[in-house]
Length: 252
Image (cartoon, rainbow, N blue to C red; front, top):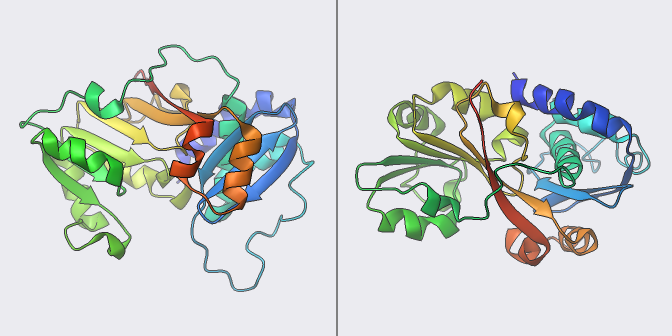
């Protein structure tokens, strides 16, 4: 089920109805969408095992389309289409004023101690140093075997999520379709953060989930981001052209 994805589409539908998509770039690391307003958004590009040299059936018809139609791809059955839909959602959100926006480093704000059990879903290498310095118990759930043998399988991760005090969850779970299962596996953590440039800063979409914080990004230089994405760049290379921001989620 893509419940949260449907909520994002519903909440942004009327805003999307007034906009058209000006440009779409599907890079090796990220996908970027720019609207006719000039606003842009990004989302992780999933790896696709295509049966032909065409990876997206709507290719060639996205630029110029109504933004509402491209946004609706967020609930498509194909992960790559969902990436385009999520990038469109983030482009729509780029110009939406947000309350309680904080630029504070999210790990610092969690005030972790040796009593915490942190489960990280997705391998966020830049965060590992601070997490280990806190002395917390740390489990990492990761599908990519290249990150070593110390990571947990999704099945092991479900067990850890049920008892953890803090969860840090990759925003790419909205693209690969694992978010619903991860949210269901969560027990009652004091904090659950959806993290990464893909994460949409739309608190209302997560009010019925166990997510407490959304740590996402806003594109500040659309042209630069589209160029980086087109040339195969990722988060580090986009960093000068995006703002990382965090908002709280009120439970519904």
